[in-house]
Amino acid sequence: MDREHAKGVADKAKGSIKEGAGKLTGDKDLQMEGKTDKAKGAVHNAAGDVKDAARDAADAMEK
Image: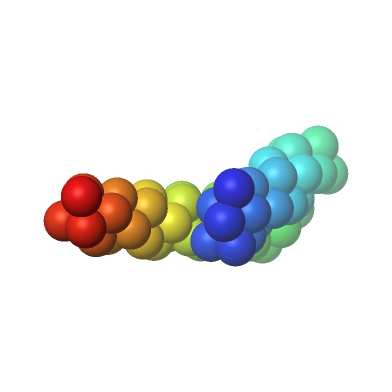
């Protein structure tokens, strides 16, 4: 797991916790923060996927 994927997992986990806490307490702002963190996590995962694909393509060209 590279750095981008690790950040993605961490942001998604943090977002899920915030969103759940917001629902539990009725705090709409905390829910929105959680959703935002989850979205950031998805972006980090996508960036990691792009890096992986680029690395795989470069490896394939070397062979």
